[in-house]
Image (cartoon, rainbow over all chains, first blue to last red; front, side):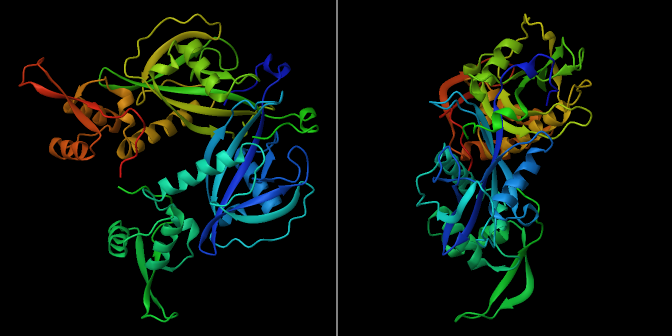
Length: 227
Length: 227
């Protein structure tokens, strides 16, 4: 980054916002958390939770604040990565905003009421059935869903949507929900176990009608790209 | 992105810059284009070519302008993708800048003199032998090199560093230079041909001391992730 030079401070420049795309799985659907805006512009529309970036906070600090203030989510408890920065000119406005979007995976999101003048309501929406959205947020969500679908194919980030311990069938179900497609059980097991990223936890899940299934966990919680 | 609300315009907020990381291969080395700064701060230091984002241009427009004005590179002739947006607080400055970095691959970069008061000199540096750099640019370059090394393993972006037609041995050499490692010829050929992204162009390269080698080209110039 570049320190201000003496000229630039006098010139109008874009503002910076951070928006967070929080994905979770609920009712066997991939869902995203949206807020109903309490203020203009787009008052009453659903939108991504977001904040203007302050002078005294990093982008990550701003993402943390957007999560906490607008949705009650704590940044330490979720998988988070920067998605993309959007900076197209808006059609009918003299204003100019650059938006840094963060992509978040939460494995146990519970809707909690938020006290903020800018959030009238908070809800989960299936990514396949989105309401009308403020700003360019529909396009941003589409890009994030594409990233998620692509990235689970070559990395272990699905761990952000799974509990600490899980059956391989839970993991397959999570992949199927995200990809919106049925997967072959044999191939899936073979691929996932072949990656050597999982270890059995030495316990079996005795619940359910079928024979007990082995429980697994990820050996590392670091993001790993598959070979 | 979010339109200004009436309050935000009166509050100080970060400025936005775009920096471009232009990689090319020269003398069998992976190199990056740097500019020697003609102005403070960091006057006389080497730095990434970059510009402040204006109110009337998109981020991509700003990247195009940085390429053209600071290095003479035309955006249409290179592979370009957004790398990452950096927005840490700087230690000893009241100013606050958010930097959107773009990652550029050029297969035929020629150093050309640039007339700009902010560029005193332009040069190519091996990524393994960087000079002392302005701002946080060393860290940004490291991140970009890591991205390049990682992404050639699961995508076809190496095409940005290859000519239109090439021998498989040229392609292997390019991978080896980027990865800074020797690759096995048989495995490399098998993997690359197995991806079905290349097609023979029906010509052979008759130059060189050895028997003529088949020339290939990429079937599509779109970015493709390997399965």
